[in-house]
Each structure stands twice: as structure tokens, then as C-alpha cells.
Length: 265
Image (tube, rainbow, N blue to C red):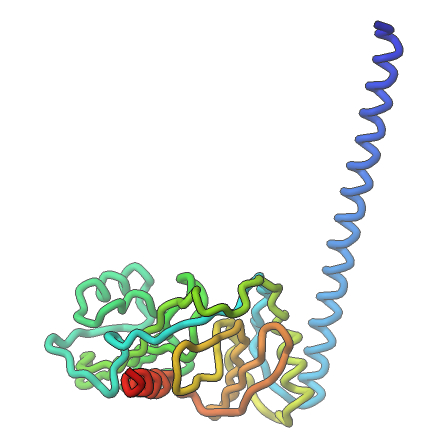
């Protein structure tokens, strides 16, 4: 074997590999810089648009753009209540407790699966603490709620909707990149007159058009809350805007679906 020739070939191969890797690294960094520049431009343009309409907005606007998919759920008849249920054992609750403290209270409560919900300060009001069921322990399903009713400083009753994933009913199983919150805000402002409004909260979660039937389909959605109670939902994939509407959970829709299903048996 001609070792000298083999050595030359190996050196040439390594040099070529380095060139290829270097080019890939350069294009990757170039793409990242371009994306950063585009994102910065989008953010500034959206802020400028909001100011032009005299719209106040939070200093901190979410920057997450995860890959998510549409989900299909069924409301659990055994856990979805038609009306308020009085608790046998009352308890005190600070909804702003740490997650671990909340789980500890949930474990001791007679409310089933209470630990699978997350406090929603935006939807809560005096004497009524609203919690949204979480999808994958991360994203709130805005229409699937647990409402806790307080009297005399204690939780004395609750109203609950609980949904289970229905993987056998199809739905959009392909993950997609969710639109940035700034894109959702631009879509909102360009389609609805919000001059002089104050945006109080922007949050990513799941939302769907609930019907009196099972199952229900939900998609990733940006929820934008306006001072005074108005709530808009912006589709996380196509930017379509739904609203305005007052905050209301899915318990009524879940109960109607349960009754409809029972009537068809």
C-alpha cells in the first residue's frame, strides 16, 4: 500500500470535512442573526403600532414560540358538575401559594384531581377563585375550569369541569410552531378597534369553540385580556381573532355535552 498517497487522501478528506462543517456553522449563525433581526424588527413594529393606537400594554410580553398541536378532549361526566357542590370539609386557600404548597392542599382536598389545575388570576373575581386544567402539566385549557367559592375566608363549594385527552378522535396531530405573541397582537389590533385600550394580560394556552357534543377540539391560542373585562382569543397558528367576550368557563358546555350524550344513550 502507498502510505504516502493514503496520507495525502486522508488529509484532503479532513480539509474538505472542515470546509463543509465551517460552511454549515456559518449558515447556521447567519440564519440565527437574520431571525434575531427579523424578530427585533417585528417587536418594534408591533410596539409602534400599539402606541399609534394609544394602546397600553405590559412591559413583559411572552417571547415563547413552542411547537404545539391541536388536541381533542372529552369531558369526564363523573368529574364535571352541573352546579356548585358544597364541601363537607372547608379549607383555607391562598391561590398564590407555591406549586408544592398547592399540591399538598390538593392532595388533602375532597375535590378530585384538583392538583391538575393552575390558578387563573385574570378570570378570578371576589370570592371566586378560578383554576384552569393544564395540558401536559404546562399549558392552561382556558375553557376547562375548576371554580372555588369562598365564604368567610374559607373555600366552601366548588364547580368543576374536567377533560381527558381523546387520542382516538383524530384532530391535528402534527406539531407546528406557534405564532409569536407580537404577531398575535398585531392581528388583534389590525382587526378590532382597540384605540385607547389597556392590555392587562397575554397568555398562551388552549381554547376551542365548545359545542353541546363530545368530543371537543382545541388549538393553541393566545388569550389577550383588556382592562374592563374584554377577552380576545387569537388562533396560535393562523392569527384568526375571536372576541371580544366576557370570561366564562366550559362547565356549562361540558354539562350540556354530558346531557346530550346521556340523552342519546
